[in-house]
Length: 210
Ligand code: GTP
Ligand code: MG
Image (tube, rainbow, N blue to C red; front, side, top):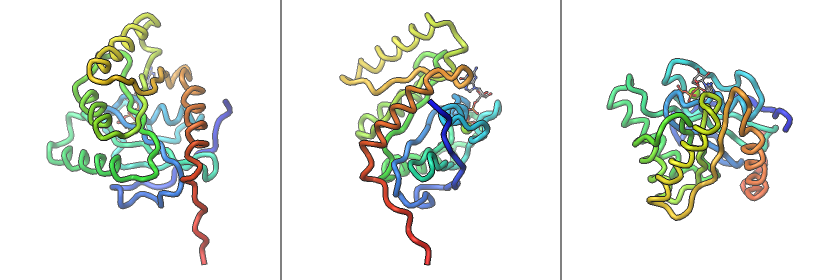
């Protein structure tokens, strides 16, 4: 799939600061350093679109990107589980994200990212279970698949599925990705393209300026 046109649009401090909900929107969420910003750059094919860093906790606001010339929004959310954030500040942005996920009408899917190398972490499972309980549509994305062998990837993904099947009858859509090799790029882009067609009713014209 060709690279897309994508550009940074706005950083919102909370749901009230988000743009008018006039396009289908996809959020990327997961632990700090899991590879959210790298994945956004990978799927759009725009290098350095989202800021990536080896230092966890880099992404601190709801960062909006406009993709394919006014067709859909992509949102890079701040990572969770960053040890250096104070408890008070953590609770505050947890509230911000919860409100965003619950209230944003045009949010079509949230992509929840987990590191392929690790077994299911409690904070990830809490999020996944909470999304399920709230009935919020999400996909599960395994990141950094290039860092371990194919067998280990398969094993870890299967273990993850088993863990989810203990609680849920249905599994979410699952993508295995590597921002380094480009694995999963076409699959995620195709998924979003189909979803955009299904959600075309969300698209509203830009308000005309006087
Ligand atoms: P925060 O914004 O701090 O929450 O981090 P993030 O989830 O946006 O992670 P980011 O994309 O900044 O990546 C964190 C680190 O992991 C960087 O050093 C990336 O180069 C590295 N990384 C991300 N994705 C991959 C991948 O698929 N493979 C490998 N090998 N490294 C990756
Ligand atoms: Mg980031």
